[in-house]
Image 1 (tube, rainbow, N blue to C red):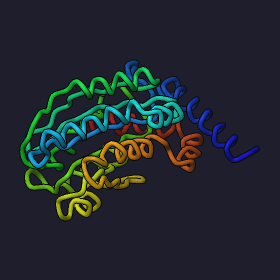
Image 2 (cartoon, rainbow, N blue to C red):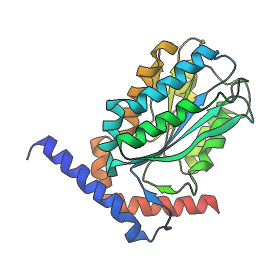
Image 3 (spheres, rainbow, N blue to C red):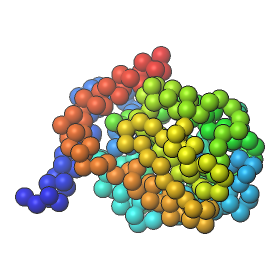
Length: 259
């Protein structure tokens, strides 16, 4: 058997494990099994002008319309992910602009892109990524979906100048059950890449993506989404062997932190 055939077989068996999980663990009836729950946090602070905001927003729109992201979703464990979209700025300035959405086809990916395209800018204040993380992490609880991976994706162009300590918020989110926090730093402000790497990125396979400027954002977010959605093969093998148990642990962990 070739390596490619084996990997495809593993993904197929892993998908069966994910789909079968609700039967084995008597999960709440409303919990839809997916391969990934992904929370997208977009910086809309005052350092980002209207043109740059639109480049960011259109970057997300184009990414979910792209063949690469849609193929990554369909080829992922279970062939489905759940995603939400959060705008954030200063302390007390975070809102879920697009709620948790199931993406399991090109049609649903395009619909999610259209939902992002329709939103208006929510804020233009200071930069408080720690507060954004504190806002986003609890939204995984009772969101109607269940998976073995809960990932937060933070994009922005600046370091913290407001709100709670970012590294502490990251650590609290990970301790509370979020598996991974990834960053996309838009270069320009001194030290932004180091800040994202040291204070935002964390958890299992956490990574930093770089956009050289806002014009580079669309390509950077597409690369980042594909990397987040596609589970590395060793992780796929682990999910094949322990997928049902992992989902059971995730549900128990989620219930404990929601109590």
